[in-house]
Image (cartoon, rainbow, N blue to C red):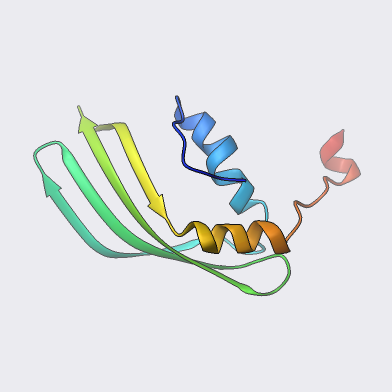
Length: 104
């Protein structure tokens, strides 16, 4: 289950933070930015994500990311989201099993 922790790389975040959610979705996660603030090297983005889960039900979440930038690259990110929505998705939608084609 996705939970509060520190990821040491972008790839680790994608594999362990995002994948448990994204693999349970039938559609892309559509993000809508609600607010965006910037001050010096810090950017804060508040946004909503919506998609259809593999079970046909909607998945909705709210996010707030606090990003630190250096030389036009993100060097630190704090990601806040509604863990109740994530837990509901993870509990009701199993991770799909890879097809024979994907296993080869």
